[in-house]
Length: 298
Image 1 (spheres, helix red, strand yellow):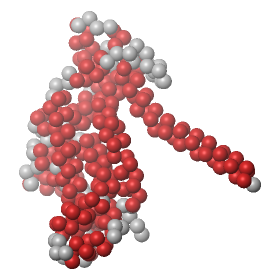
Image 2: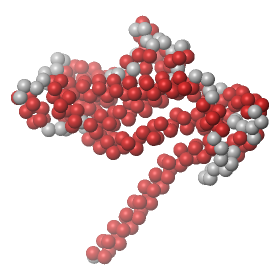
Image 3: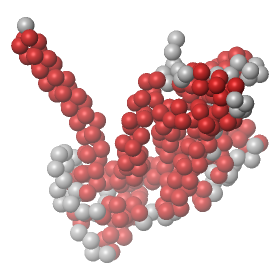
Image 4: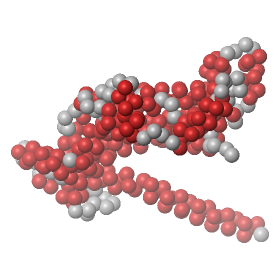
């Protein structure tokens, strides 16, 4: 019996490891495929002949994309909105989530139900644009920060997480005369770091990838984000590739490495995805714990 148990357990481990290995490869392969197509012979990439191993390695595509006018400025805008927007969103969500655990909060049940309703219903695009217009959010950097500051989903995650922590810690602090702000900063924040890390990932990815607010609210090219610039060039990949090809042709570059619409799109995609892929592993261990404990119950 003991030997049989060891054999069955071993088979389970093998199957378990195999399944998760295949799943891991399935998740990683799209990024690998994208990358090897950006550094391989452009003609082969355009014909779909690069599948597993890069051929004719070069970095011309990255050099050409970095020459897109206004790209460096848009990178600075995207990084700024991602950092500032994430900090504001996490701080606001954490404090409001904490307040919703306090019975002393005025109209707590009403405001919480109102918050939940906003997750299912919204005013629509045109009313949203008119509100932003009258608030002076057009051609304004704050348009990237303030509309994203309060997220009902994040607030609910924090509220659920705070309720799962020992209430005696906050009660003992209140008996010692600590106010809500002191309790929040000294006791609650250290306890809810996993859910804050989870919210940070969610918010940072949203801020980094968003380009629709730029599309509707921003006309000043100095405030264009990286994603908006790349979105526009992805839609114009054919004309952009023709322009770059003429520039490359005049410089005597190898014709096999000349850019084409396919390589433009894959290279632009790498620019968008790479920062998130590099940052995510540092938050992964907090992300798993936070999303499990902070999940909405009942």
